[in-house]
Image (tube, rainbow, N blue to C red; front, side):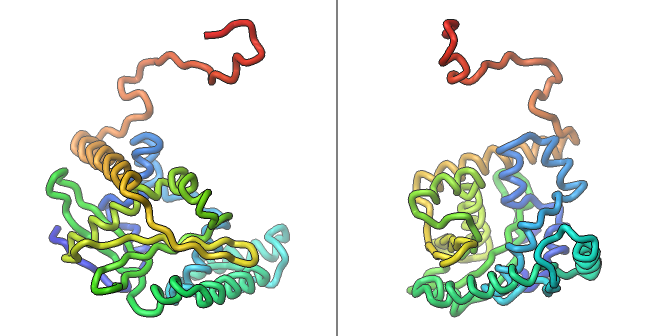
Length: 272
């Protein structure tokens, strides 16, 4: 597969590709090949939080599946759930009325943020990239939220709705969600299609008023760790694809010895 960038590819078509994505690499690094293989064959379990994120992405970036506004306070009623299922069947994103108003306020907060608004003023959304990793012999893919440039340099922007955009908490959140893998993965994608020295910026936005926005980049140490984890994931993917075997935590099917966490012994006379 030669490196190519595909604009406006339908999301379902992108996710149907067997090429390894950053989220797949994160799954391989955080769980086991068996978990990864199960999810790619059966699809990721749908969560309401995904719908909210899709709606926010759509309004902020101006792309995405159309919305269906549900006139209900929550999803507890059968009528609301039936309308939600009808929206899914029609390829639309269901969202409650109060959530719809919420994401509009979030989009307004993005427009009021000097740097975020500037980054998203010019550029192109949802560019899909496919390329062959020559080192590992693996087909890879990535989908940029937003691709722009500043001072002549390419910038990949990734928009994240979050419980917090406090800079003091972003590092922990980035590690918990594997963002240190995503950033270098997307930078590799940009370089594969000819962009030199791409920069990757996260645009974090809180989901509750006043919808504070923080633009952040990961430091060099985080990027280096992400590259190591990506290399491990690519190696696992290559080997499992070649063998057709997707093992669980213990590849040989044997057993292991485990320890309790140290705090379990705090009130005990038995100490290790």
